[in-house]
Image 1: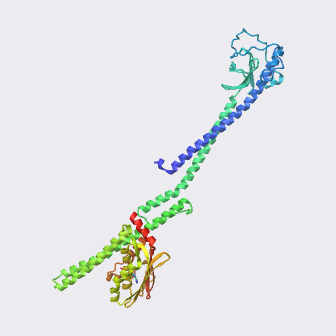
Image 2: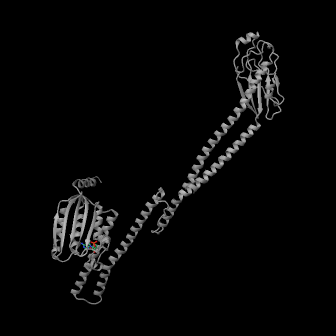
Image 3: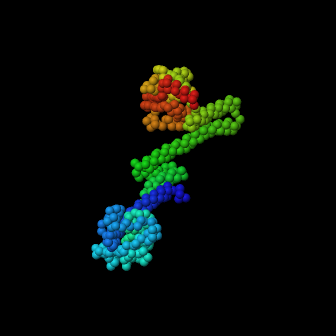
Length: 512
Ligand code: ADP
């Protein structure tokens, strides 16, 4: 559905905002233009109304002549006294009946001077027209170009201001004189309205063009901005279909999407490695389990092929037992690794001294070392930390048995513990065969054995160091090795140290 598409949603928002902004702008411009046009017409009309006012006053009978206050102002008392006659009071509508009998209507007409007549030149296009009414509403005079039946404007109060009105396609300005007559100037605004309409259409067309341009540009921009996202999702789809070596092509690794693609690529790379390791692990595990199974079956088949003596049967059963025990060790190691991988191995931690844990392990393996004539020397300084004593003992035992197993007869093992730079260190160094530089980077990998045939024959699983590393890492530590072929190897375990750390670990466990 297109409503789910980010691109469409962005476009719709952009279009909505643009329509709002453009219509607001267009309406404002249109109104300003119209106001400007009408104020120009009104100025011209007011000029003419003022001239008409003067002309009407000029056409007054004696006593109403010059001396009147100028157009638009209030009537001065002195001027009426001067004329000896006060005009009848205003009664509302221009043609309202007079309460004290019909007033004498002064004989007035519009006498246009040449200059004023020029303002109403009928020969000019778009010419102005005029009309004047007596105070009783009777038409006094109107120009020949005036439209038929110009209605006299309604007067609502006594004001003598000039008013304007739009009537059909005419704009008119009118004014009531102090004596109550009405003068009006007007002109046709057909051409002006047409121009205004043209302007409105022009605005509409310009707005539509801007809208189309902006939407087109916006579409291009969003398409370009969204393309990397589409590439990312396409690559992710191909990867999820099984092509784990696929990567997202990043054009600009510095922008936001480029950085996201970079992070995803490194995640995919890690996933690929993890899947490959998982695959390898499954294959290796099956292989490792198949070997003792084959031994078991062939031993049993060979023995059962003919009648055997009791001693022969005993020997076969012993071989089968050895093989079964080897299988059990292997399956236990595999289960342990799986638990550590999944984080299910709940490491109950407690404050402990690594020196004491190590000493207990050395005591256990010492008989094996003596059997091979290997000397074990200790330099155990207190090294307190928070950890799981059983698991750390498993690490120490594994390092010690390796040091015995891969040592020379009558060789030497040096075991040390100490605190260094806030870390509890355990080092196990031997004077054995050492590890070649090619094997060194791989010895912590699962099932990796430098000497495969010899190790397997002696029942070694190739999982000891992998399990040790998983335990040490679960404690937040590291395990390192340095080795020189023919001279010996040294393994160093580094764990976060300190009684405080140890206490914190205990408290955290209680709270959890
Ligand atoms: P294994 O059961 O084979 O000992 P480990 O994971 O403990 O498995 O060791 C992996 C490999 O590392 C061994 O097969 C061996 O080749 C090498 N290795 C481990 N410890 C030593 C050591 N102290 N000296 C020489 N080689 C060692």
